[in-house]
Image (cartoon, rainbow over all chains, first blue to last red; front, top):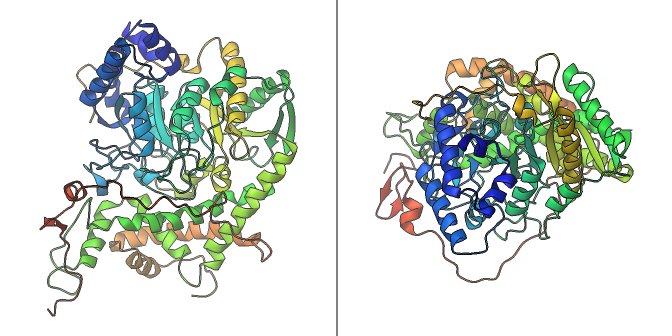
Amino acid sequence: MSDDLLRLSGAALAERLAAGDTSSVEATQAHLDRIAAVDGDVHAFLHVDAEGALAQAADVDRRRASGATLHRLAGVPIAVKDVVATAGLPTTAGSRLLAGWVPPYDATLITRLRAAGLPILGKTNMDEFAMGSSTEHSAFGPSHNPWDLDRTPGGSGGGSAAAVAAFEAPLAIGTDTGGSIRQPAAVTGTVGVKPTYGGVSRYGLIALASSLDQAGPVTRTVLDAAMLHELIGGHDPLDSTSIDAPVPALVDAVRDADVRGLRVGVVRELGGEGYQPGVRSRFDEAVGLLADAGAEVVEVSCPHFDYALAAYYLILPSEASSNLARFDAMRYGLRVVPETGAAGGVPSAEDVMLATRAAGFGAEAKRRIILGTYALSSGYYDAYYGSAQKVRTLISRDFEQAFTRVDVLVSPTAPTTAFRLGEKLDDPLAMYLNDVATIPANLAGVPGLSLPSGLAEEDGLPTALQVLAPATADDRLYRVGGALETMLLDRWAGPLLDRAPALTAQPQQVPA
Amino acid sequence: MSEPTAALTPADVAHLAGLARIDLTPAELDHLAPQLSVIVESVARVSEVADDEVPPTSHPLPVTNVFRDDVVRPGLSAEEALAAAPSVEQDRFSVPQILGEEA
């Protein structure tokens, strides 16, 4: 019974809850038990809030019993990336600097989850301040890919993707600055969506790069992503960049799932060299299915996408070096006081800052902060940051041009399947290449969805396809995603995750 | 500091780390300098296509100033705001000395 509850999609679990076939307490407990059994191996969670989740679940069950009108996802438990502020729950962003920090307020998306009655199971692991593609830059140890525990679940939101892939949660929240929702989805055989920039409030997200950051759903099905996206999306007066317009009808788009006559552009620059053969063959097959279903498939060139990675690794570090300046050891977070100041004698505030940030930031955070400081320094500003901003314009123009010819663009989400832990840890450029296909969407603010496209023949690991749409046309992602998912499930005769190896339950193991 | 150069020395990195208020060890400087040089060399290619005709983009979607009505609304209490502070004194954040020691 409880294993059965674990493998349900969020939408299917919601139906059972509405029908009275199970309770939120029962479903939440089943997921907590699963976390206790497998998270010692997977390490998707940094913090589990059994008490809070069960209290929220009991409250939903009571309200349902009293006949109250509830949100359609009421009672469905959820995991939240640790970069999202949760009042009363530790929020570390994977950093030693914030170990044990408990925010005094909720992010807007958390306020919406709580109001809709989704029990929050806990906070998921991530690369420090969302800087990374593997979770190996978490100060609290990496997460492991449920498909192969020796491999990474991607990053930065590898914890949320692994939690969903390991059936520790039906739904999760991620954030995507350059691919941190979509790339982990790709390598764990799950679904992830980066909404249009401004589509989901950034209020209460610990900022990495404010012009790129966007929160979104992490799920096992396209329908679940649509339901969660509709719940957390929409205008928020607390975020000045929030789009003041209704969220498109995403759930309807999934259910409609009609791609006849839809113009689909395959991005020439996001494929070919550097993409693993199995990733390419599964991608080509999926595009073939779209054509079979009546979509018009053409090849489209976006020539400046070749410069996206370079522009991103100037813009992101620049914004990050500025955003992370707030961690100054004065108002919250870690404070390390050196024995003496630089000039001898009592340490000054500056001495304390230098020592705290040295002890608190990990290697990748230091790399990017220093890179950003360099790119913004006078004399280099125009050549680096200024040029990167121009490339950003050129990439947006490429998208605009492409969307005059096609309704959506498609590409592989990530160039390879999941890589091994340690493989790219001290090779920053190799690590950065994981996001080569996801970054253009962040630079231009357009939405992107990743869904599984199959398993690569050479290693048996998940591959994925990405759909990109014009800004605020997020519904197109779900139309294509819904249609393709239906065809692929039919082809596979069941969900891809059914082929993942079973994780060994360890009843004694308690998550760290 | 005029023309961009790809190679960053440990001394350059030490200077930048100082600006960023991060105290790096000599070992970290030696490790980071060549890594950052490789990254900088790689990202410098943005200048290949960034000519004078192209306007910069700082934000993906058009941004307008956002106002709200000038009315009082509840914020954090002093207790809530100070709850995570490393050090508190008289209902305020207590910080190390900011000025020199001559006082």
